[in-house]
Amino acid sequence: MTESQEQQAIIHWQKLQRQPPRRAIGMITKITVDGEPVGKGRPRFCRRGDYVQTYTPIKTQVYESRIKAAYLLVGHVMQGPVKICITAYYQIPKSVSKAKRQDMLDGKILPQKKPDVDNVAKIVLDALNQVAYQDDKQVAELHVYRYYSDTPRVEIEIEEMERSA
Image 1 (cartoon, one colour):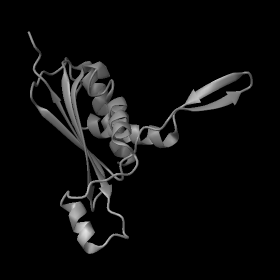
Image 2 (cartoon, rainbow, N blue to C red):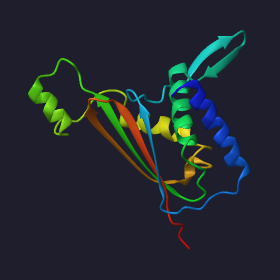
Image 3 (cartoon, rainbow, N blue to C red):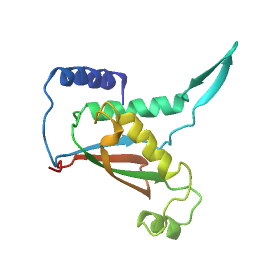
Image 4 (spheres, rainbow, N blue to C red):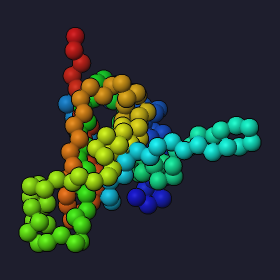
């Protein structure tokens, strides 16, 4: 995502903040973040004199901002419970045979490498907090899948669910 697209997303978000919330129960918002999936990085600590400062790794901050910017271009803040489906597509290693490569593309061989599925989910949920939903406690259903592909990416589908009476 280019810098101008990120600026457009921010302007779009500011306009949405001034509008009353839209109700579109059952509508699915889909976004795609291109590139190899990134997991949530552990917080880092450093000493500043007598104090210890906590910070989030730059790689995590950058990836979270890419997710936010992609969502801001197409989505709105959802008010009720939400269902999220995350599909992470990993790059196929160049060293695999053609037969094994085809098995990976067909889903017969699934990724068993970093980042872990829970870290991919965590970075997506944290990035969408206050953007797609007011708080991550609204996430009522979560599905995370991992596959191999020629084009590494993360696809995210968010659906506002019907509220129970």
